[in-house]
Image: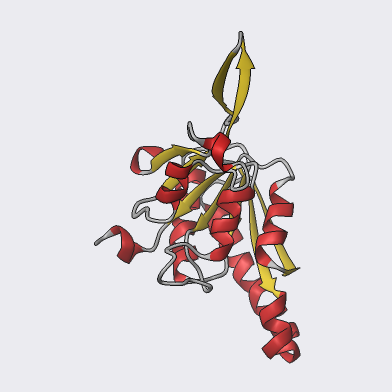
Length: 203
């Protein structure tokens, strides 16, 4: 599974110079330009016998997965990787969709009930697919708020890995990463598997 993904630490040697960003310079550059799935391993710096060492915070990545979806094409692609992780032994998955409060309240407030119904149905379909692949526990969560904020809050609940597409409905061509995936990569305390769009990986 991970042999097909680039793997990089969330803390590079120059991290002391990038405290505000929480990512080393090299890591940040890779996050903005990767064309293959990218596994971001969370690390920390410790002092040992007068020396600074970088150690991994990663345990069993397949223990409890959080999959975030906005139902875009890239999210569907990322979901395929979640399915492979389940087939590879992951038994506990939470599927999360956050309805974007800012977009809905500005333009679509009258359709929230319809969105609730449609999104719940979509989440249940994804849940059943993972169950059919062998997952024992699949929770679905439909939240309303600011996607990156809600996802960060959810990520604090004991997950071992977050899986999401590295661009979504909020994609900007000049940035290469959606704002939600960028914020999660920078701020979450959990390892993150980022899946790029197919057309980026096939250039």
